[in-house]
Length: 97
Image: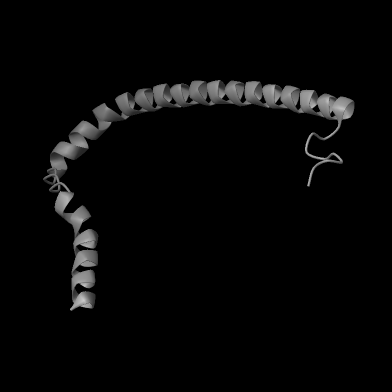
């Protein structure tokens, strides 16, 4: 009985995305698509240019953030190395078990 319950539970998990899925949009009529395709081509290329510019700016912001984090990490490593050179490794001493 237990394997049957387990399999029903797994089946319900597998079917849940299908239950939440939206109904498909109705198909467009072909003459309407061809007439509006020429008008939307210019708008879509303009929109894609804006999207590309937005993506480039986001990438530049992320690169600047990563460079800043790398500089901070390098500075912390230098401080730790300088500390280790002065006092040695704090976890290694003669009284440590």
